[in-house]
Length: 111
Ligand code: 2BA
Image (cartoon, rainbow, N blue to C red; front, side):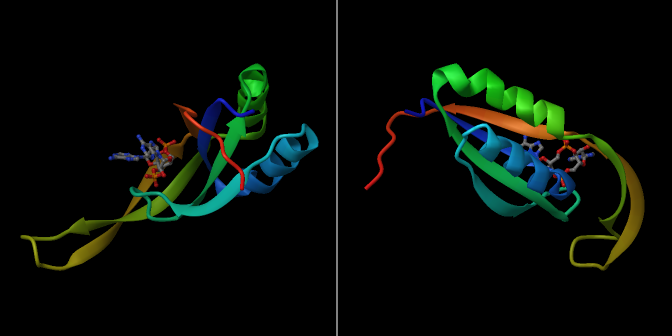
């Protein structure tokens, strides 16, 4: 029974392989199409409920599959005062391999 919920925000490029590896190892996962607040571009959030003894294995798979990448993006920068126009300004950031939140699962119910 899952006792922890792993919420992993990963890059779209890594998502398919990550899901395959998790499925191959017997994990259950839900994929959400999400958007990063800073870059405003798509990323993928996986919800993975895991039993205590499977927790480290799941984290290792995420760590192994997901890669960090430098990304050029255009970030809207406000020109002038609020209400004025925005200009797109190119920026380079390193997007991490995975941002992971771990939550305690109070109850796990399937109807
Ligand atoms: P984004 O918000 O689109 O952020 C993409 C990358 O841009 C970040 O990579 C970071 O390198 C940079 N960045 C983010 N906010 C910034 C800021 N205020 N100033 C300068 N650079 C900034 P990561 O940190 O690896 O994050 C990748 C994605 O993970 C994020 O996409 C966001 O969707 C999620 N994320 C990261 N930290 C989070 C948090 N504390 N809460 C919720 N989601 C988070």
